[in-house]
Image (cartoon, rainbow, N blue to C red):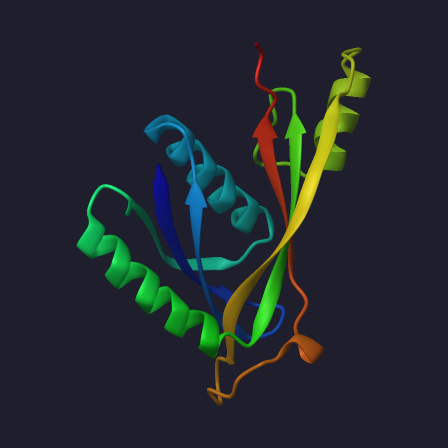
Length: 154
């Protein structure tokens, strides 16, 4: 399964409007829901103002997939910066807390704190100064997210 995700938010630290869009693969609809909700939680932990957020499946309609990917290609050409997404698999994460806070909470509760760093993705975004409307480029924009996923118990 392949999905397209789009989020627009205000980054108060830069007084900037950010447009984030990407495709992502998943094996089930439940996994897509979880991925999306975890990403929204990561943005909320950064205390941004989310304006709109949505995702939809694109691989079950060939025409929709072509149109979406063409639109996304245009988006990529207009992108001005990147968001760094660090992905962590962690046992029963509290989505309101960072990786460090989750691990400390487990440590102080006498539970074995386990987290596995599973990689970093730099996702292109369109960033504009909220007042002037000028593009903000990578040289002046830095934004990271911690994407926390529950460890799958197999």
